[in-house]
Length: 200
Ligand code: MN3
Image (cartoon, rainbow, N blue to C red; front, side, top):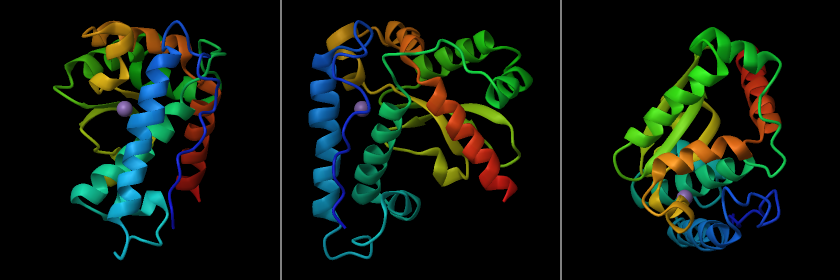
Protein backbone atom coordinates (compact mmCIF):
# COMPACT_ATOMS: atom_id res chain seq x y z
CA UNK A 1 0.00 0.00 0.00
CA UNK A 2 1.46 3.32 -1.07
CA UNK A 3 0.87 6.18 1.34
CA UNK A 4 0.37 9.44 -0.48
CA UNK A 5 0.58 13.04 0.65
CA UNK A 6 -2.96 14.27 1.38
CA UNK A 7 -4.06 17.59 -0.03
CA UNK A 8 -4.14 20.40 2.53
CA UNK A 9 -7.72 20.96 3.73
CA UNK A 10 -7.30 24.71 3.05
CA UNK A 11 -5.62 27.00 0.52
CA UNK A 12 -1.90 27.55 1.14
CA UNK A 13 -2.44 31.21 2.02
CA UNK A 14 -5.59 30.58 4.11
CA UNK A 15 -3.80 30.68 7.46
CA UNK A 16 -1.96 33.95 6.88
CA UNK A 17 -0.73 35.96 8.69
CA UNK A 18 -0.46 33.28 11.41
CA UNK A 19 1.10 30.58 9.21
CA UNK A 20 2.40 31.74 5.85
CA UNK A 21 2.04 30.07 2.46
CA UNK A 22 5.83 29.85 2.40
CA UNK A 23 5.85 27.85 5.64
CA UNK A 24 3.28 25.47 4.17
CA UNK A 25 5.28 25.12 0.95
CA UNK A 26 8.10 23.71 3.06
CA UNK A 27 6.26 22.15 5.96
CA UNK A 28 3.61 20.31 3.94
CA UNK A 29 5.24 20.25 0.50
CA UNK A 30 8.69 19.15 1.61
CA UNK A 31 8.83 17.92 5.23
CA UNK A 32 5.49 16.07 5.30
CA UNK A 33 6.08 14.70 1.81
CA UNK A 34 9.56 13.48 2.75
CA UNK A 35 8.18 11.41 5.66
CA UNK A 36 5.75 9.69 3.27
CA UNK A 37 8.37 9.11 0.60
CA UNK A 38 10.74 7.59 3.16
CA UNK A 39 7.96 5.48 4.67
CA UNK A 40 7.00 4.07 1.27
CA UNK A 41 10.61 3.07 0.67
CA UNK A 42 11.15 1.63 4.15
CA UNK A 43 8.06 -0.60 4.24
CA UNK A 44 8.76 -2.33 0.93
CA UNK A 45 9.03 -6.05 1.56
CA UNK A 46 8.23 -5.76 5.29
CA UNK A 47 5.26 -6.87 7.38
CA UNK A 48 4.06 -3.25 7.29
CA UNK A 49 3.74 -3.05 3.52
CA UNK A 50 -0.03 -3.66 3.40
CA UNK A 51 -1.05 -1.97 6.64
CA UNK A 52 -2.97 1.29 6.96
CA UNK A 53 -0.93 4.17 8.38
CA UNK A 54 -2.48 4.09 11.85
CA UNK A 55 -1.67 0.40 12.23
CA UNK A 56 1.94 1.06 11.31
CA UNK A 57 2.06 3.84 13.92
CA UNK A 58 0.69 1.43 16.54
CA UNK A 59 2.96 -1.52 15.73
CA UNK A 60 6.30 -0.37 14.33
CA UNK A 61 9.47 1.03 15.80
CA UNK A 62 12.69 2.68 14.67
CA UNK A 63 12.80 4.43 11.31
CA UNK A 64 9.50 3.01 10.11
CA UNK A 65 7.74 4.28 13.23
CA UNK A 66 9.39 7.70 12.99
CA UNK A 67 8.31 8.26 9.40
CA UNK A 68 4.85 6.71 9.80
CA UNK A 69 4.08 8.71 12.95
CA UNK A 70 5.37 11.94 11.42
CA UNK A 71 3.13 11.28 8.39
CA UNK A 72 0.11 10.65 10.66
CA UNK A 73 0.86 13.58 12.97
CA UNK A 74 1.15 16.09 10.14
CA UNK A 75 -2.11 15.02 8.47
CA UNK A 76 -3.83 15.34 11.86
CA UNK A 77 -2.21 18.75 12.43
CA UNK A 78 -3.49 20.10 9.07
CA UNK A 79 -6.97 18.86 9.89
CA UNK A 80 -6.82 20.78 13.19
CA UNK A 81 -6.32 24.08 11.31
CA UNK A 82 -8.55 26.37 9.25
CA UNK A 83 -8.52 29.90 7.90
CA UNK A 84 -12.09 30.27 9.13
CA UNK A 85 -11.71 29.60 12.85
CA UNK A 86 -14.76 30.09 15.01
CA UNK A 87 -12.61 31.06 18.05
CA UNK A 88 -14.24 28.71 20.55
CA UNK A 89 -15.56 25.16 20.53
CA UNK A 90 -19.04 24.40 21.80
CA UNK A 91 -21.03 21.34 22.77
CA UNK A 92 -19.64 18.33 24.65
CA UNK A 93 -15.98 19.21 24.21
CA UNK A 94 -16.40 22.66 25.71
CA UNK A 95 -18.13 21.06 28.71
CA UNK A 96 -15.26 18.57 29.01
CA UNK A 97 -12.64 21.34 28.78
CA UNK A 98 -14.40 23.26 31.55
CA UNK A 99 -14.68 20.11 33.65
CA UNK A 100 -11.00 19.15 33.31
CA UNK A 101 -9.21 22.53 33.01
CA UNK A 102 -11.61 25.08 34.53
CA UNK A 103 -12.06 27.11 31.35
CA UNK A 104 -11.01 27.30 27.71
CA UNK A 105 -8.54 30.06 28.64
CA UNK A 106 -7.00 27.92 31.39
CA UNK A 107 -6.61 25.02 28.94
CA UNK A 108 -4.90 27.32 26.41
CA UNK A 109 -2.49 28.62 29.08
CA UNK A 110 -1.52 25.13 30.16
CA UNK A 111 -1.19 24.04 26.53
CA UNK A 112 1.07 27.02 25.86
CA UNK A 113 3.39 26.04 28.69
CA UNK A 114 3.72 22.36 27.72
CA UNK A 115 4.29 23.35 24.08
CA UNK A 116 6.97 25.90 24.93
CA UNK A 117 8.61 23.64 27.54
CA UNK A 118 8.90 20.64 25.20
CA UNK A 119 12.68 20.42 24.87
CA UNK A 120 13.72 20.07 21.24
CA UNK A 121 11.49 18.73 18.48
CA UNK A 122 8.06 17.37 19.23
CA UNK A 123 4.34 17.90 19.49
CA UNK A 124 1.86 19.35 22.01
CA UNK A 125 -1.41 17.43 22.25
CA UNK A 126 -4.88 17.61 23.73
CA UNK A 127 -5.93 13.99 24.23
CA UNK A 128 -8.85 12.01 25.55
CA UNK A 129 -7.63 9.44 28.00
CA UNK A 130 -9.11 5.97 28.49
CA UNK A 131 -10.88 7.14 31.67
CA UNK A 132 -12.75 9.74 29.59
CA UNK A 133 -10.83 12.76 30.88
CA UNK A 134 -9.07 15.29 28.70
CA UNK A 135 -5.34 15.82 29.24
CA UNK A 136 -2.45 17.78 27.75
CA UNK A 137 0.81 16.10 26.90
CA UNK A 138 3.90 16.85 24.90
CA UNK A 139 5.81 14.21 22.98
CA UNK A 140 9.33 14.13 21.55
CA UNK A 141 10.20 13.79 17.89
CA UNK A 142 7.56 11.60 16.20
CA UNK A 143 5.97 10.10 19.32
CA UNK A 144 2.19 9.76 19.16
CA UNK A 145 -0.26 9.43 22.09
CA UNK A 146 -2.06 6.53 20.36
CA UNK A 147 0.83 4.36 21.58
CA UNK A 148 -0.25 5.08 25.17
CA UNK A 149 -3.93 4.42 24.45
CA UNK A 150 -4.77 8.13 24.43
CA UNK A 151 -6.87 9.52 21.58
CA UNK A 152 -5.52 12.72 19.96
CA UNK A 153 -8.09 15.52 19.89
CA UNK A 154 -5.88 18.48 18.89
CA UNK A 155 -2.19 18.95 18.16
CA UNK A 156 0.37 21.67 17.54
CA UNK A 157 3.64 20.84 15.81
CA UNK A 158 6.52 22.37 17.78
CA UNK A 159 9.39 21.26 15.55
CA UNK A 160 11.39 24.31 14.48
CA UNK A 161 10.37 23.71 10.86
CA UNK A 162 6.79 24.58 11.92
CA UNK A 163 7.64 28.16 12.82
CA UNK A 164 11.14 29.19 11.81
CA UNK A 165 10.16 30.99 8.59
CA UNK A 166 7.38 33.02 10.24
CA UNK A 167 8.57 33.40 13.84
CA UNK A 168 12.30 32.54 13.70
CA UNK A 169 13.22 31.18 17.14
CA UNK A 170 10.06 32.45 18.89
CA UNK A 171 8.12 29.24 19.53
CA UNK A 172 5.98 30.94 22.18
CA UNK A 173 4.60 33.47 19.70
CA UNK A 174 3.88 30.71 17.18
CA UNK A 175 1.96 28.64 19.73
CA UNK A 176 0.03 31.72 20.85
CA UNK A 177 -0.94 32.42 17.25
CA UNK A 178 -2.22 28.91 16.61
CA UNK A 179 -5.46 29.67 18.47
CA UNK A 180 -6.39 32.04 15.62
CA UNK A 181 -6.52 29.15 13.17
CA UNK A 182 -7.92 26.20 15.15
CA UNK A 183 -10.56 24.18 13.34
CA UNK A 184 -12.82 23.72 16.36
CA UNK A 185 -15.39 21.88 14.23
CA UNK A 186 -12.79 19.18 13.51
CA UNK A 187 -11.69 19.11 17.16
CA UNK A 188 -15.32 18.73 18.30
CA UNK A 189 -16.01 15.98 15.78
CA UNK A 190 -12.84 14.13 16.79
CA UNK A 191 -13.76 14.34 20.46
CA UNK A 192 -17.31 13.14 19.85
CA UNK A 193 -16.03 10.21 17.76
CA UNK A 194 -13.64 9.30 20.57
CA UNK A 195 -16.49 9.34 23.07
CA UNK A 196 -18.58 7.07 20.82
CA UNK A 197 -15.71 4.67 20.13
CA UNK A 198 -15.21 4.08 23.82
CA UNK A 199 -18.91 3.75 24.53
CA UNK A 200 -19.19 1.13 21.76
MN1 MN3 B 1 6.28 19.34 11.20
